[in-house]
Each structure stands twice: as C-alpha cells, then as structure tokens.
Length: 426
Ligand SMILES: Nc1ncnc2c1ncn2[C@@H]1O[C@H](COP(=O)(O)OP(=O)(O)OP(=O)(O)O)[C@@H](O)[C@H]1O
Ligand SMILES: [Mg+2]
Picture 1 (cartoon, rainbow, N blue to C red):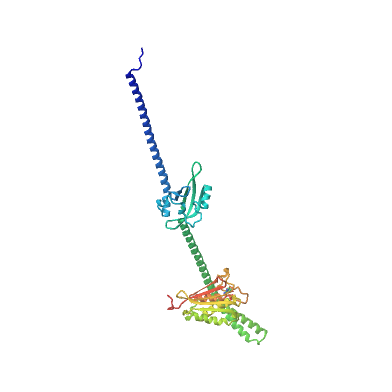
Picture 2 (cartoon, rainbow, N blue to C red):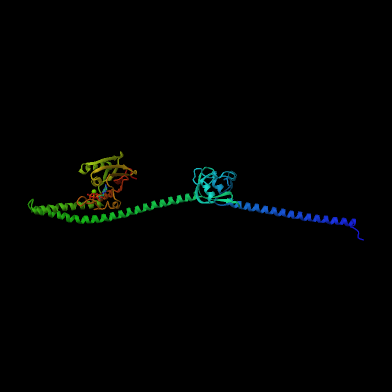
C-alpha cells in the first residue's frame, strides 16, 4: 500500500520550491544589478564621448557656433569666445543674430534671406560677412554654414564655422602698401637713373659742343676778316660786294650759333655778384613784353615779398630767363596767359616758374628739350639753342631747370637757384 506524501516529505518539497524561488530571485537581482552597472557604464561612456566631442568643438581654431532650429545658440568654441570677447554664459542661449554686425550683408540668422537659402540648400560655403565683437568692433569673416537634420529629416540645428579675415586683410593691406612703396621706390630709381643718364649725356654733349665751337670760332674769325678786306676792294653795290656781304651775314650767323654752343657748355668761372632774382625776372619780363609776340598775351606776375639774393652773372641770367619767356609766348602762338611766379622754397633756394597756356610738352620730347639744336620750329625760325643755353647758364649757377605740363594744360618751366651765402644758404 502506498501512502500519500508524509508530512515531512511535504515540508521538504516546500523547502525545495522556496530554495528554487530564492535562487531564481537571486539570479534575477544579480542580472539586474549587472545590467544596471552596464547601463551606468554605457551612460558614462556616452557622457565622456559627448564631453570629448564638445571639447573638440570648443577647441577648434576657427570660430564655431552651434544653434538650434530657431537660432538659439547651444554651443560655442573657445576661439569664437576669444574672437568676439564674450563668455560662454553670455552666448549660450542668446540668439544667433546677436553675433552678426547689424550693418553686415549676408547675415545668416532666422528671418534673413541667407537663412532661407541655407534651409533650402543645406549648406553655404565661404560666405563673406561681418561679425560684431562685444566692444562693437566689426570683424570680417568667411563663413561656412551647414544644417543638421534628424532621422526624419527635421532640422535640429545649424553649425557655423567662421574664419577670421581680419589678419588676412591686415596682411593683404600691409603687402599692398609694401608693393606700392616698392613700386614708388622703383619709379624714383628709374627717374633718377634717367636723370643721371641725361645729365651725363648733356655733359658729354657740352664737351663736344665746346670743342667744336672753339675749333670753328677761329676759322670763322678768319673768314670775317678776309671778307671785310676783300669787300674794301669792290665798289659798293657791285655783285661781288653783295656776295661778300652775304658771306659776312652768314658767317655772323654761324658765330651766333657758336656763341650759343659756348653758352650751353659754359664751364668758365663767371664773375659773380649778388643779384635779386625777383628783380632779374621783372627786368626780363619788361624787356620781352615789348616784343610783338607778347601783344596778345596776358601776363600774371606773382613775386614774393622776400628778397631772393643769388650769386650770379647778370647777362647770362637775363638771357636764360628771356629764352624761357619767349619760348612760352611762341608756344602759345602769341595768344594766351603767361604766369610767372618767383618764390623761396626750401629756405635756401630761390625759384622761378614760367607757366603758359600753350599745347604743353609731348612726353617723348621731355628729355630732348635742353639738348642743343632740338627744335620743333620750322627751319629758319629756331635754332634749338635757347633752352640749351638756359640749361648751361642755370647749371653754371649751381641751379636746376625742369619742364613739365600743367594738369590743366600748358607747360611749366621751373628754375631753382641756391641763395647767396648768408641769405638762408646752409
Ligand atoms: N613753353 C613751351 N611749350 C611747349 N614747348 C616748348 C616750350 N618751350 C620750349 N618748347 C619746345 O622746346 C623746343 C626747344 O626750345 P629752344 O628754346 O631750345 O629752341 P627754339 O625755341 O626751338 O629755338 P631758339 O633757338 O630760337 O630758342 C622748342 O622748339 C619747342 O618745341
Ligand atoms: Mg627758344
């Protein structure tokens, strides 16, 4: 006969069940604890990864701003804070519009044309615009902006990366200024070189002219003497006498040319005395103004009150001034305005400028003007010695002469002379 479970059997069964339940519970709680630890570990990893990414974002060299879909700033890089002079607390939570200069074109913030374009295209690159610093300073930047979207393509934010163009612009500006400075120095050097070549050419021309003039002077003197002797042997009005008179006239013309050449190549020491340049100019003006070519010319004379005493030789200086004045009247074809200015500048120099309303000087002629025999006048009207003589005289007085065009037409010839000792000369 089988009996049912005894009381003690029943008790041990219940115990087994309980042990089993407790074991299962223990396992369950153990599993739960492990999952919990794992979860915490994962959350920690995630936090660290997040922190790591944010740190990278904060540390990028270019200014970086992240904002949400409505333009509220959520993250800024340290370089951006440094660039704009704000603190993180100031910026995070504020509106993106506050980082842009209000006057700037191409602002990318809600409500602007660029924002709409950004949302349509997803990204904008190398956009030039201006940010504004906390102090109100305008900061030119090149901007790259892109939209962040979630899995269902909704906009969750916008990332802006700004490259500061200030330094580049400053560098560009400095480079440009340097290039301009170099260009100016180069042009000055070229001008100096041209002037040196010109002055070297003029002095060798002067030596040649002086040699030729001296050589020709003697035979010309001989021709004149013998012509005069022969003339005495022929009755007045005879064919021979007329021919001899022609020879004498032409020979005298040659002598005048030789005199001009000697004037250009003047090297001899002049007998100098003190002369007032202002007075010299006034006298020269008076003497030329009675010539018919000045009849229809309006003369303007500005003479500074100051005395401008130079050491010089009156005759040659008068001739030099007269040549320039007559040239001006001839260039104007006898009609126009002649302006003569005499002034002292710098302290030890006296200057005279003769300016006319004629056609001015052609660029290609500027360097030839002072050479002997350069003339644009028709044959028989000019020998081209006027300015060569003037050049010689001015140089012999330690001065200089320049020719240039007036901005509003006409030519200006400026002569500068050192003042006599004790008159401001160093
Ligand atoms: N004020 C001026 N405006 C324009 N061209 C000028 C002026 N002065 C001189 N020139 C030019 O310079 C050239 C040379 O002048 P320069 O006085 O040496 O000789 P010229 O007047 O031609 O002859 P001359 O020997 O009779 O003086 C002139 O032929 C003319 O072309
Ligand atoms: Mg002349």
